[in-house]
Length: 302
Image (cartoon, rainbow, N blue to C red):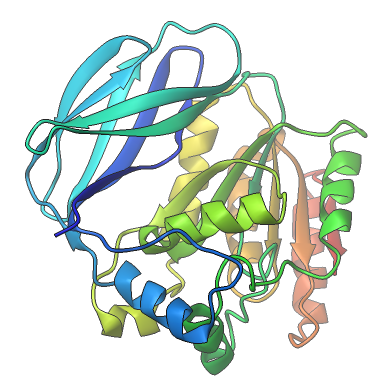
């Protein structure tokens, strides 16, 4: 039995750091390699959704010399908040210790400058080709491809150039990725971003799923998850302004309009990728007019 604690990338403001993760009693997901074929990829995907969470167990979290004990819930999930005492923005390590098996696991968190522009971006079909609205294609990609064989969107370099232009030609450093994907896919996303040299950031994913039936419904849209995650970031960084990036395939425009209507003084712009197989020009134009009404720039890209 291969037990493991997965600590996710955490976030910090000038005062506190928040980290989270899952403890697994059984976790057989292996490191990805370029030579892995469809059969190995399928096995890896199944393993992600058959990992067995470790319920109600104590874990020690150490951040900048401060240790705090937390306990996992019934789904093996834990979260922890610590006053950090750090001054400089950037990435910092933290450690998880599991006394039962005398194991230590490392992860990291990002301390963001309050005044640096933040980018909040979707992932599926905004950066990663996922065919989220095409069920069969989506399932095939998820089952048989890996972080090396999945593809970025065709003009991913333009993606960053547009963000830079929207930020007054300055390249932002703070990236937060809010996705309908579940924590089961965390290792895949970390590998995919690293392999494709995409901007490193903190992920906000949906609750862990378990079983093959849940695998098929992976990535199902939950309006509240994205909106609540974005609103949390706006509260956690009360002085920071954000650029919102998504696509026209699911509910991004609706969510971003609601965010703009509440926090228009905090949003520097909205970017929407137009999927070639989604024909909703009138809808896009409608949201553009509504968002522009708040003097927030709105642009589309491919």
